[in-house]
Length: 460
Image (tube, rainbow, N blue to C red; front, side, top):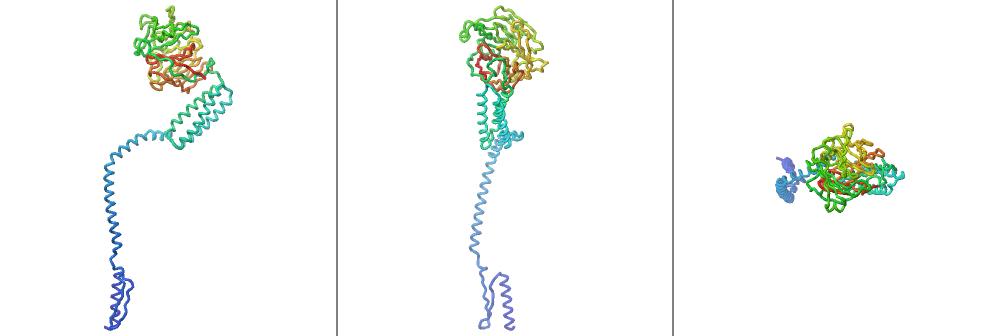
């Protein structure tokens, strides 16, 4: 083989091997002695110690991370029951808000609605203020409250959206009060100088009736005739909490408070005879007791001095528990409820002709004839009790066992009614058996779960 051929063959092999090994920079030179010396760079054949160490560190880290993940997974599996219980608790807490959201009660746009309602309130206030009125101070108070409400709404929008419904209710009550002023404007409410009822005091007197706390139903008060002797009276229903035959009287406030020198006067000898007392809707006026006659649609007047009884049919009136007061718990046999104000004697009842809604009639206190009648749109079973002040009928409803609310009024002078009074007062039991106003001392008398309670009244 010639030198040239040998050189070619060696170079080819070396280049082939170098190409196979990925060797760069291979070349051959001819040295003395006819040897072919190939110089190659073997940098790619060296063991990558540095990269191996990096790979080993990475592997160690992965192993450590895997162990940590296993521990976390084990811990998470252990905590799952606790998380599930918390989730169920959160779900139950969110249900009311979910219902609010579905009813579109809890939504950012509602704040826009609130702002719009505030704007409308400002317009109404300005409109009412433009009409001459004796309620200037009150309107100023409502205006100040509206400004406070505007600030509260801004705060709610930023910080406290969960109180949105409470704020809406507050604005609704303000709106109702303002609408009351708008409805009546400068009209005189009722036929007294006091105007519309504004508030009721805390109880100025509260004590158990003299027969005992177990007698839940009855009535009490002071003779409501101006100029009459100071006669205090108590009538408790002692048979089945429905029927009564005795009225207890005291000839002074001192004797009443100390339960001394009382006189028990029998109306009838038996509970279940004609003209016996039925139901707690009684009142004493001009030394006479007025009540629903036993088992009939008749009104009875019992003269305390002469013991004489007058009875007259109340036309179309429901009786025998057909239309009792029944808002929260039904107060049995309150079909007829007598009341007295500055104008004299009234009776509150309901008729089928008026669809069970309250009917108010002015009654002649001597012969019990009906002088005039007003028909309301207030369902009698939807109220707790009612009374009359200055020709205005007021109705109450249950708030709680210790709170009652006067929510409704009907003005017989202007034939106007409103259902947004929101006048709350304290009571001692859920059972409001009898509530009536006395025009002599301008107090409200309440027979409430065996307690006798009295209040001061405040007017606009």
